[in-house]
Image (cartoon, rainbow over all chains, first blue to last red; front, top):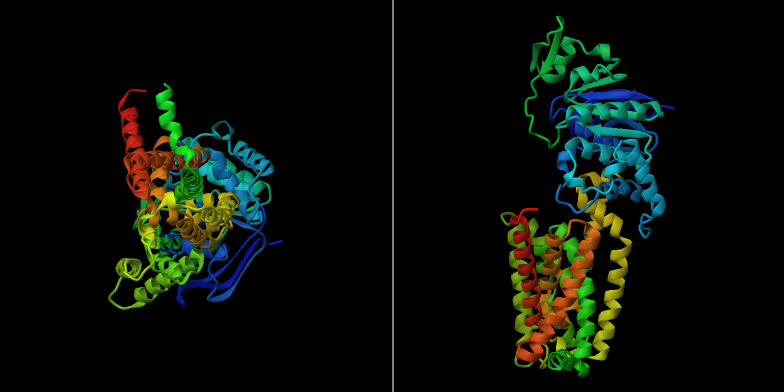
Length: 251
Length: 277
């Protein structure tokens, strides 16, 4: 069963398309990297997958529950909650409004925290955790939601190397369990390691296996802001100069 | 020793003081608990505006002999529509429209309340008169306070999730708007609950000061709620003593004690921060 299927999809606000001509699929167990500059339409696509935005044209079919792991720098660090409280939030939408999360929900939140390797820190204040740990707590929250499709919005931004490794392993495991995992990212090298890539820049530039990431495709995606980087391995590597790295609005 | 005990016990022999205490316990429960959400949602100013915007409705209801709840609802609805309508007007931003509508509403309410023809006691809606609370007033307060407390209990998880991160609340399947609306409706109900004790002008003291105090002293929501409620009730009792022995106005004494508790907590907090752990 295909988890996400877009055909000739156009998305935008107030009748004006900011993203056009999308045709792609996500199958169970696939990891899809979404590449594109800030303002290229990544967030718009995530909103549409959540059902917040109706297509202007074409069709978008999403099979099953979608869960977003937002950028951790948007969360409030002074908010008086523990890691366990945050993970438990994932269970709330499944309960009717008059039900409070109980022992069962907290147990599944603890299990999810164990899965991301943070069970010992369950009672720690969310704001006291490192950026990478906070990101993992938000992944745990998505696990509690038990969504078939997990969307990660630039999960590696501001994350230390150790946490990045844990996150990568988590992404692999989510996919191995049969989920569809969509990862919005700036990291082209990392995207090459995933199953599919989708390049966006106001429209769909490319979709397919990572070998579609040729220089012309990357140039079309990032508007030519690519620099060749000598990574010391002898072969050419490519880096990207994000145009507005601090713009986390509708990136 | 017995002198101090007598000093402490003497006020509670009076029926009006017992009524005042029960009234303040209910106000403290509602204000202290809901106040934590007012603080975490950053809607203190909206709460104050709502309290003032409802004022002409409360006065109108009292003048017409209608239930104060109905007056409060009409007042809040009228103020909200006024703000929305003015906000749509070109050249007037939302902040200005709130300022204009709330000031006009409050002015109108004060005009009605202070008219020579108005029955005595209606001024209580401005500053409150907790010492004049009757058995029937207590019953009305309880009838509004209990559903408010029940809703706060039931909605807890949703309030927590939306307050944590509004934009990602959607991502976990919770629509933030109904939750935010619920907060403001609960604030409106809390204003009606507290207006008899503290008056329209001082209601916000019980919604903001105890929660702000608790925020300084705790790092988790659970303890914060308890500390806030405890501070709200303790501030009410301290205010009653001040009023009883000092002959000062009840509502103002209570508001003063609540704000005093916050100042003490602030001094404590900064002293703790300065001293090495």
